[in-house]
Length: 137
Image (cartoon, rainbow, N blue to C red; front, side):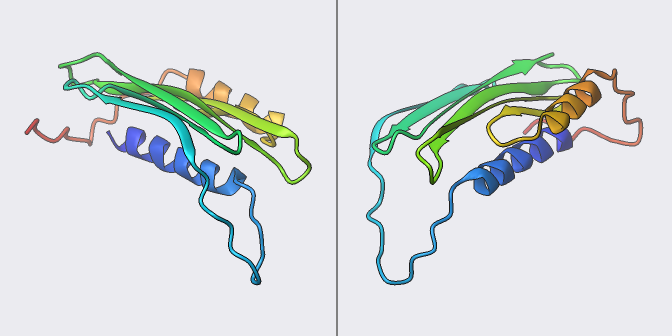
């Protein structure tokens, strides 16, 4: 569970880090309208969502529960997001996260980072014997 929370934290950080930043103290930008969106949450913890903004940005994400009901239950997450940089070039990042880590690809992410993340995620992890899974509530 800690790995899943960490992976979601990293996803949020990358989204914030990759988003274009405009420094304009004299004018305010109106909010970007969401043209289309969907959000589904399921009782087993799986979910999917997407949205498309009027400025061409979009994001989609899907999570599937793996090993449901076992001590090794985890979410397998995959998704992508896209935006236009200051030069008008579309930047797209795809990612996956599971019990082995977070692997981003594309956009301005250095290929070395993607390769290293993928290699680490493919290593068969040893179970954390000191971790007690919290009871299901």
